[in-house]
Figure (tube, helix red, strand yellow):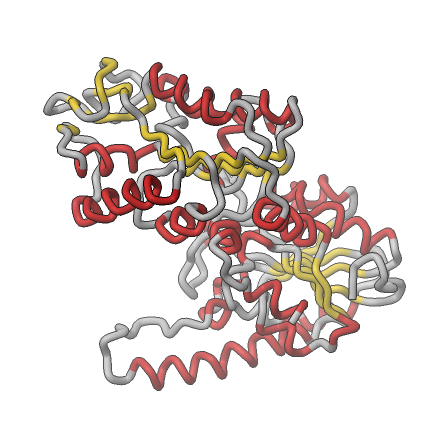
Length: 415
């Protein structure tokens, strides 16, 4: 079933969204990208005469009620975005009466799903090494089914529009789908777009294909790096992982971030790229700082010759030129992860150079997909969100999809 074919009139729809939005210390939303992303689906259901039950997680409360992760903080923002008053259910598992009372055009937002450990389905308070862990895991899986069944009981149909959690087999993202037949469960517009965007990158590659992988750790990106090796023409590896590669090659990296247990892996990636004819672009120079703050003293130095007491915090001017050259002329571009500590304005130049090169290539006809929270924050910070082809709301989900893994949240509906 597709969302366009379903008749929502007189029906209650429970919709899994990803409203895990960043909040400041006053509980105000600092980036509403994820809320805006879900609006087409939510508004469509209301316009078609349906009633709306919205569910999401926020943060990692680990099965406990933690006030700073309460979705109550975003009720007004969701109401303003939807243009409709939003009711709030203080307990997501005890909302049957409120759900039953909903009329066409009305909206109910459930409290944080992860206040219940059953949402994630992991035993709480027991170590994996404990002999009793497997029994606890079985019991939790049974509880997870009951929790999903409760959520399902609120509605006539289920819509999954939370790509950001599609790689998790949680109660609200996958298990709940078991309680709806094929005619009453579907992907939302955002999920459909996300799945299509990944397909464009992996199945509809126009060459040259340049991928930019940033961030602090090689270990978190190894699966996607290895999968991309067989697909890309140019692979830019930047951000904190730069210094693991520099050290692996015998360089001095001062106090820079480094995964010392991944030095062999870094050398293996370099060898793989060479064997497969991939143009691997690593930073040759960096902005080094004597403190992790925007006001730190800085100097430009080679990425493999950083003085003791200094750390690499951004790509240097020569590296920025090399990154731009690998992006220029590309017809397919994937970007995940910044080139430096872009949150500090003084260390944002490397990430900005990447964003500008991608925007220019997109203007010239490239298909560009930006994914992962930090990369999305980058293009938003630099005001370039409308100059790329597609911005993905999913970090881990996007990476797993590009790694070629089946996403439980998609499989639960599409089979």
